[in-house]
Length: 628
Image 1 (cartoon, rainbow, N blue to C red):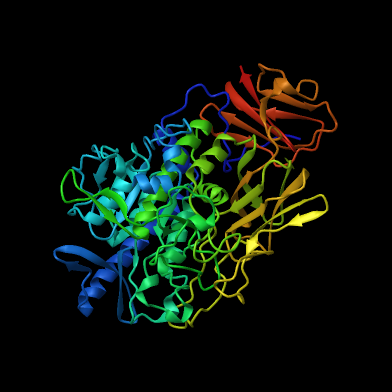
Image 2: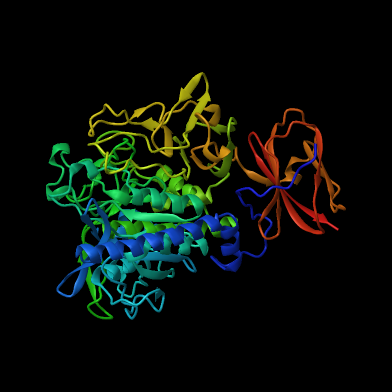
């Protein structure tokens, strides 16, 4: 058979690359842009700008303020007007880093990774103002993208992400990252523009304000704005939006659900990372060592999806303040927990880029964070108070550094009617955990005109499923039943609500297992990209090696060649899953999904250096090819 050229989403290799590009340079941005739907992002930007203009005019006509000030500081921003009622959004470090083990992987940490987030640009949207650019901790790394005065809240969240650490207690997670700061007034249009320019990460520590006058039918509702954020993320697959869960649990709202079901609007989106807040943890020793804050908003969404996604320290976080260039302050809130996660993602993206010469897709980041999270709550598995658990930066970094050894990070695509399988070997030394995540097609919100209390229409569009089979067993992911109490533990079964699925088997029998990804019904747009993170496989069973170590079993020849390269299977026991070819820039130029013949021909287009990646059921091999 002849391999055909195709542009598909990638899983890059760099074992033979001698020049690692700096993070988020022009090449990186171009790579991300080519894999984003720029035309759709442009249309979204135009649509959101028009929506914002209409909102401003409507507010003026109805006599509503677009911003509400307190002591000269903006506290709330008009988000929407529904049935004539205005809805406003409001603002929702060494200790914070220690709680999530970020201090282990940053510069000078015990891991030796010395990550700083250098050259990663974080989009930073704030409700009440912008960070104080002249603060000594920022060193010119905060850039205002619009004119607005500084605020305490914005300066604090910026410091949690990127403060240099001149005051060691206030060191940010990613001390060499940069921030592009904006106000929330037209955030959707600006987010679409940021993503279209190759942006990969943003922080949003704000959300709709709850009040005693707000109808309880809005809590947990997948709103129009949630769908819009999902739409941005869907068209920009490398762009991760980190959003605070909200601080509404101790305000006495939605009393009927005892503090649960209190997420509002954008915090119900599928394709973003929603962050809740716990108190400081000196050393994690199990779920009992972690205390919830009184304020962090609980899920679920109305369709019983697992939200929030992740927890981090958001209680009395010490960070920068705008009172002066050397000013610091303590603050609490999910606003403070979210930049802990955002800054950590900058470090993990830097690490992944060092190893792979590319960035992770947003779904890959979500799968990695969830797969590596520490258990929280009274019951095993996820829950609606703590999501998938406590951020564990050190474990997430380990799963990157151990990729293709004891862990595996995959970015793949499933077509309508097809399935994906992968064989793994496990032993009795490591607990097995596998997380599947995908950036789903935006859901269709239920109109607020007909919305009923806790209306549970499913917002998941493309429903993927993960299973592990082997040794006569089938293992299923965590899920919740809509008939369950909010406080009940998760069960294992068919998850048809979430675009994240996780399987945990702490006591799996040693042996060979098959990981399968399938789908229900028809896939929108006939295909769905997905990410898979596996941890706990037998050491070396997924090892990457040069093809020379496989002499006598697989042969690639001639090398150098004139553009025609033969792949010959010598050992009949070997089953090839796919072959991929990359150019020196790391772009995939050729791929096969199945490989059944004993000998095939690669047709490489031009003279140059290429890298062939051969994936078998148990191993991955690379070979450098020269075309003359």
